[in-house]
Image (cartoon, rainbow, N blue to C red; front, side, top):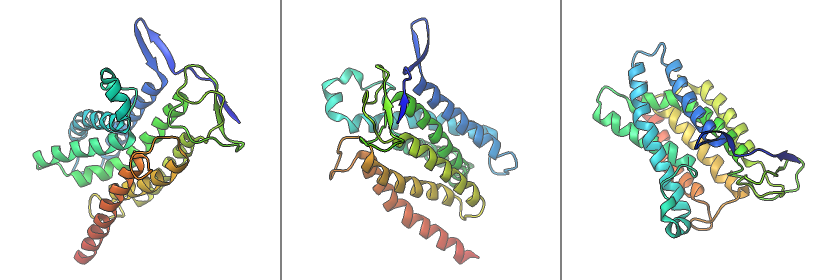
Length: 258
């Protein structure tokens, strides 16, 4: 068994409490922006200003939609505690990704010089890398854990402040996802600049992560949202229904032009 005895609070500055989860989420966002700036060094279509503008739009829209999906997932609790609806302790990965994508897409519609598909392809590897970093925060925080198991690599949370079940061995689904995300990061790097048209790499990312979330949530702790499935699984199915045909359509259309 892997025992984790980590206090969720990393340190305090006066009345301000800084948690490990918040640190890792911040690091994930910084990593994504740094990845984008690094990736456009020789890009003729995207400037650093465009990346910064995308971040200015995508970060708040991602956070808002991420919080919205979290509240929707735990609707009964937040209806009983409406004062806790506005907060940052509960966020949804799918909400962050889709919320940021929608915000950046709207920005691209307004700014005609900004190509959403091209930017999305640049961001795709950085997004999955940022997710891997974010899951480190989940591991330390004790959230997003798996169902009980007797496997030798199960994790056991022992710190009283943890969000995880104290003293109960569970699947380290956060660590599973860190490994998967890093594998997908490598796949996206191999496919980068090989897929046409713009937006195809981002669609591949959406498809791979959707398949993963649809499967991993069967061994992850959570509450049924619809048809006995978790909210993330329902969102994953919806993303697959849209992304797979769209990728096939775009790739076939690109082949016809060759």
